[in-house]
Image (cartoon, rainbow, N blue to C red; front, side, top):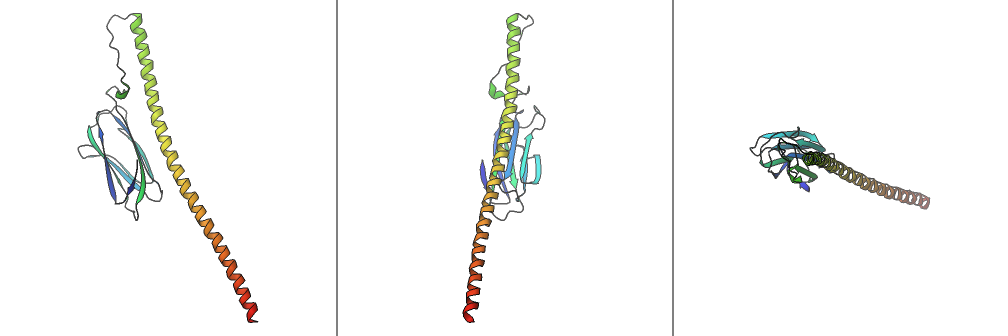
Length: 196
């Protein structure tokens, strides 16, 4: 999501339905000279995470997977005290809905309840379940890492494009300045020759 930060502080609300959900949050100003402060508030209004004055922020909440937190509408506030003009801000929030066993609820993987008597089929199903859960956990990690890398690449690309535009602008200005100085010198030499 991209938006303009036009006042000193703007807040975004988003719902979280699982008490063990993990949130990956990335915030960046598209121009690095605008440092941002980011603060995440619990549904009760207490501050959960606070970061200060940087062009880029990335954090996850809770820091330890599977930790309990409140459910409801979380509030993410982004502020900048040095704002002189609207600042473009890029925001990515990824919510992994997990249960108390740190298993992604969205995957709909059910644990097989085993009885005291194990037969070969139950053992095979348990192994299959463990392998499937393991693959699911690795896929979630890969998904998070891909989101982080995509976010960083997007911001880097925008910084490079901005720098390229500035280089082109000043190069064109320098060419016009050289042409202007050359024209002024030709005019000055002509005026000197005609006065003699």
